[in-house]
Image (cartoon, rainbow, N blue to C red; front, side, top):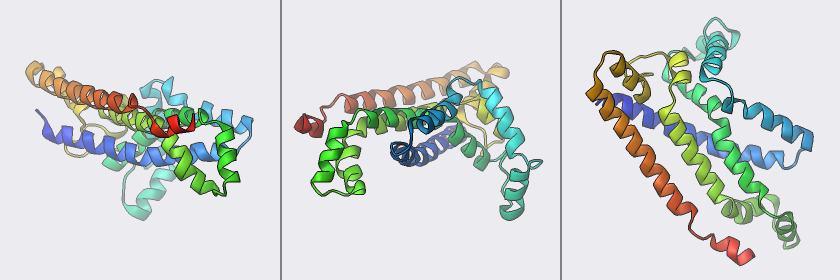
Length: 225
């Protein structure tokens, strides 16, 4: 069992989910104030990772973030951090690739909140931020939790984008999915099976716990209705 690869995968998944969920909430809240054209345009752009092959996304990220690009070269000159073949690179790639998995559940949850409820909160003297914190977020928590779990589990098992952008550097970019691939290449079936089972169990338990919380009654929702 490659525990370094497993630890790296957990770290990558947590950091990706913890950053994308607040960004997803902010983006959803901002889009509510925009026109329908702007809203739909953003949805088209940010849902592209759902249909594009990981190798296509990995290629463009590798070209766009490499030291041969203006962005990659600028970041390296100022920070001495490479955006490819490094943990920072696979984290950035994971953030971009997982946007729809974090954002879409949040967006759909906010869309189910009645507009009348938001208007009523304003008549009661609540500010925009108070309405968000006291009304909208408690009602949308299931979508937020779903987005977190989908982002975490998808990042945990991602292979193509991580391999293309980060390569296979032990303790730096070698995630559990890449380690499984390596073991399969060398016919180490027992090692590959153990790591695959670990990944399966973590994903299964995570989704099982999530389902338990998702199907609990939303007390605020019942009070409102």
